[in-house]
Structure formats: structure tokens, C-alpha cells
Image 1: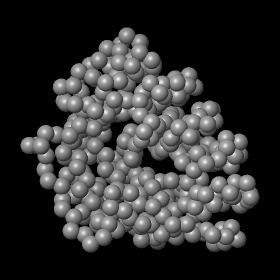
Image 2 (image 1 turned 180 degrees about the vertical axis):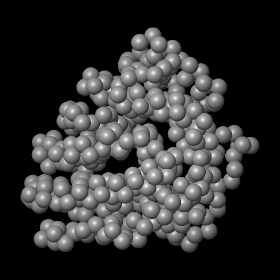
Image 3 (image 1 turned 90 degrees about the horizontal axis):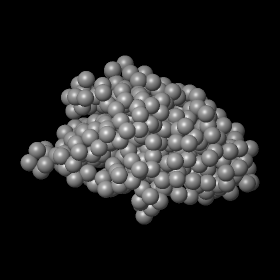
Image 4 (image 1 turned 45 degrees about the horizontal axis):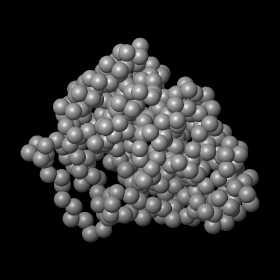
Length: 360
């Protein structure tokens, strides 16, 4: 189906089993592995005058995606996914938040809602240039990647993260105490817009014969995405449950495959609340820079498995044995770093198959 992933159907079957907390032959395993220097092709050169020009150059970004994917191995269940990307706050930009593009793969927005009295005037601009740009990039990637690679959804951050962009996170933290009713009134409007936007891109990708994927490169033929609320690290669990969990539940009901992005140790105060959402399929806990180490977080992974949630686990190549000693292979997605070679990768996959067979 995809030339860069000739074993796609088998890998997709493993991912389908992951969603159901079942097993085919081993857990889902993804890892980065570059081709040898002799096999790589040059990346396109940027001659853009500003970072914004580079971000918004559809032809350049498509060529960069094609070359970058072509320079990698896609072993295990690693998926060749390219997605149109203007940064994590592009959803808020559709409402008017200015986007600022950086040199090093990130963008950020400026707040626009300085007075809650103006909240009723906020609306998603369905003719926004950035929305047209993402649709244009999607079409370009679909054309370039036909029968070669998967084209995914952009990085959407609706809900609390969108409103945090409108207000600035610190201001929204004060709003949780001073004006929660205004936040609660705005959230359903943002959520409804998000569902309509998701359907727009979902229809385009499915019409082109694509599975649904995104920055977290799992795949599904159904509506798949990664609910999140990075702002939640700034508030208590009762506030999170009252104001934001109902919207997350609605999001999980709208989608058919979901894995929640829990960002950083500070957000672990909400772990039990997240795991208690019946409609949620899985959890991605990202410890963040400086907090690495599988052993530090094994209890988080165990709690997720005990709650019958699928779980993405970050570990190094050298920590695979620890994983096999401490977790259930069912409903497990390993994101492995530091895989040194093709031969080492193949040995790792064989080891994980033996582990899964022992646990059946």
C-alpha cells in the first residue's frame, strides 16, 4: 500500500490490536533509524529570507518531507507519516491569534482576548489564510506521497489549550478562580468548531485512501486523534474535572480512537481522572527533558494498564529488558530511542516476540 512501508497491513493489524488491548505477535514498536550516509539524499536547501517564508513554502515543505522520509528506515511498526505543520497553536490562529514562526521547528501565538466582554465576538475564520495553507499542504503531500507514504492530520490543540492561547496561560489560570463561567461558556463553541474542522480534514484524507494519523504516528481507518490539555498543569484536579473533563469526554465520544497526551510530571496529578474516562482508549505520558528513565515512571504505566488503557511507553534500547520484566505486552506501544542498527532492531523485535509469546 505504501512503498516506504511494505509491511503496512501487518503493522496496522498490530496497532488495531493495541487499541483493543490485545496482541497479534508482539507490542507495537516504533523507533527512529536513519539510513547510512551513503544511502541518504540531500535535503532541500532553504533560501528563504525569514522563518515564516520557510514554514509557509508548500513546495519546500513537501520536498523536505519527501527527502526526510526517504532517508529513514521504517522497521517495526514505525510509520512513514508526513503532516502539514504550522505549529501547535494554529487552531487558535484561525480565531485571530497572530502566529510567530521560529527557526528551530516551533511556532507560537500571541493572545487576543484581553477582556472577557469580547468573547462573543470570537469566531473561527473559515477563510483564514493558514487554514487554506494547511489544506494546500495536505493536497501537496498527497500528490507527492501517492503510494509512498502516509499523510496525517495537522497538530490541533482545541479546548483548554486554545482558550489558553486566546488569554495567555497565566491569565487563564486567574480566570479559573475569577471567571470560570466565562471559560465554561466559550469551551462548547470552540469544541464544535474543532469537530467541524476535524471532519473537513478527515474527509479529505479518507477520500484519498489514507488512514488517519498525525504527529503521534499511530494509524486508524476510524476517527483517530490525540486529546490533550497542556494548560491543565497550572490548575488543580477539581478545577480540571469541573471545567475541562466534560469537553474531553465529548471529544472522545466524537472520535473513535483516542490516546491522551499527558505532558510532564506536573500533570500526573490528573492521572486518575484521565484514566477514569471510559471512552478513552489510551495514554501517552511524556516525562519531558531532564526526566528521562523508564524505571522512574513504570508505576504510571502500570496504573494505566490496571485501568485497562493502552499505553505508549518511552524507553531506550537498553531498557527493553526492564520493560519485559515489568509490564504486560497487551495494549503496549513502545517508543524506543537509541536503536543502534538494523541488526540490533531486528534482534529487539525478535526478543519482543518471544516475550509476547511467553505471556499469552
